[in-house]
Length: 501
Image 1 (cartoon, rainbow, N blue to C red):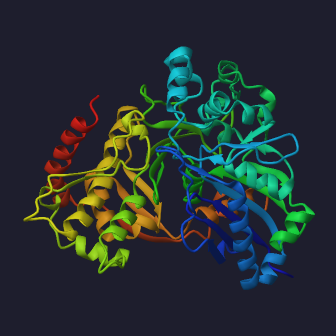
Image 2: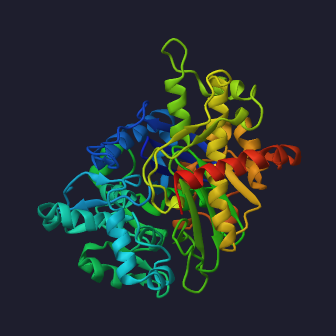
């Protein structure tokens, strides 16, 4: 008898990752990342960020085809597909199902004024109690920008989608979304567990623009013939799970219940904690969304702290401070950073160079390097101060979550990106006081497990995560925590000058 498999697709803004799991063991068999270099982000003006959804589809085809070359028999017995995707994007389709314009993606900040105006007019109590956030810079506000600034394009729009909805549409021909997806777009009324009609009414959007709602774990459509031929997968395979990248990252780490938290430190940095109460920050500096396992009778919400400038800062330092014009590699940068004492001898880095920052109330101060001394500081100091600045910015956001009643003492993370740095792990644990558990998983693997639940291959989450492997645990170092008290306090003091309250 052939071994069953599950396919997970992770649509990122930097690359498309695909993983194939042996469904019976829960172990990954093959994976692929395309393109080899990071996908371009179209920025026609400062603060703008767009991508062509056709690019996602093209790279996804390459990745799935590559997996087919490595594990053809297993892919031929594919039982389900799960999708993870970059959150908060806006994809627009006309009545024929064609793209109206490029997608406005998560780190685009042009819609901030539209969201802030809606927050003022609708009232903070209404917004925070029902959609759990200010409309801010999320999908609904992005559509409001299109309506105002590109009226001819807006007239053509029949359906709006999130990036994952578009990939599911290309696979199945079905136009649908999930409660978690609508929630991340600020288009879901968590108080009444239905689409947020009052948001649609405020912006003047017809309800017909929204896709049909389906559960996160369910058969949401089946792969049609053309997509099956393009990808080299069996026709009729169900797409059975879908979630934004941060809810999915939490799911990938089996973070589903109150008191649990997940973290990522890729291009952006995120801590995502679970609660059964609709908690929110009055200033919407951290954001609350319906989690993937939310049900009206068993509520689950994810409180999301996002820092836009994380791995992107580390990459910038790598490329700018290379050796004879050639970038260093990350392990070398980490080793060099270890040669500098905690606090980088007074050098400070503020990682705010990737668009409007939610923890700063959507301010966009740009990145900063402060207290640079030409006679003291070198490359090693910049590498260390960069990692410290990322940790400090995340710790600053965790303080906001703590005031909401979300004390985070244990964090699960994938063994990837910034968490590959031993220094970053130790500083994160010391400054935040949270222990860290690192697992050998990623968003694509999590999406594959989600598909296994969606088709009923796994009876519950416990069975779905039997193959999850813990790689390492890091406890807070008390001595290091003491060393960081003053550097972190000084950093926050300077931040208050850069971004006055």
